[in-house]
Image (cartoon, rainbow, N blue to C red):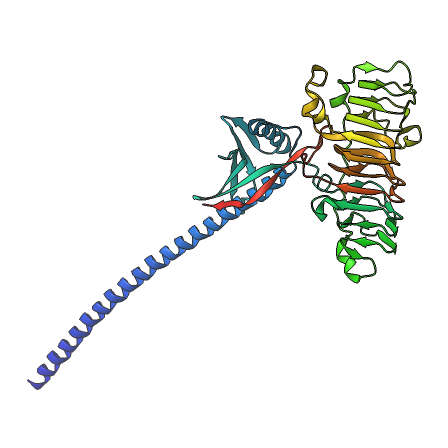
Length: 454
């Protein structure tokens, strides 16, 4: 009897253990299933995050790649936003042979440009923003993840680094005696730039001064300062003058003007050299005439000079208009010259009377002398110049002084020189950045503040 009771107690204990084991198994199984499910969610979240990062990287890669291409796009003239877009479509079609570029409905679609397959793909749309800027939208794709980046670009006129300076020379710049370069409204107007690759880029001696800073694209160049020279308002003896001398300017190309925009106005061909004073309207000076305009000469409209020629203006000469020349190319200044002596007045085309022979010309303000290939020399007082002066070589000698409403641009590698009491004041407040006669392509520049991700 005692033995049986002990067996039942052992059985009851074994039954309770089984129940507890089953409960623990169920709990552990539930926990295991929950952990498996949770780990699956975390894996999926990690995969989604990875694909999202890949999509974003793909979009960023697309923006970087297409931004470089858009930065290489150029267009001349004054195009409408729609013209810019259509020309950009043609440009991208030529530049992206591995992709597909389509244009229609005011939008450019770019597809088929794949990066490494492990980093996703991208496509792009280029259109016009509400402000008529170029608007780029790049979509990065990796698996089902998508990320978009938007960036706008504005059309920037060319000639940056050229037309934002007061004086630009392809050769060295030499100032001696009491030569001065000032700005009419600020010192920035009197900044000068030399693109010379010679050792001595600037040679300044005596009591000469430049109100603005001086720049050079030649990092190995030198600046020789002798005497009581001042640059940027600082005397050469002051170590602080180094803050106004820069040898890190971009090596840009000086654009040569196209005389064709003015040539059609020169309808009256001179049959013989002038004698004495007179009034001349829209004249063309034949090659080899080498005329001398003496006394109280009045010139109105366009004076077009064929090459070769040496044209001399002496006495009291008044020009209402613009002097332009054929371009004989570089290295021909010995037989192609324009010389100004005595008192000269150079007024802009906008001062011409409202008469039929000046129709259209009066709207082309901003240029006064455009003489590529010619040596232009001033030795007298020429007052106020109504526009940019551009020539192969310039010399301002003696008491030459003037206020130039525009820039002075010297194309050649010969020195730009100012000697004696020559005094030039640059006033760039009246006319636009690029003078008529210059065809400088505009480019696209990104607007950093427009960057957006979504």
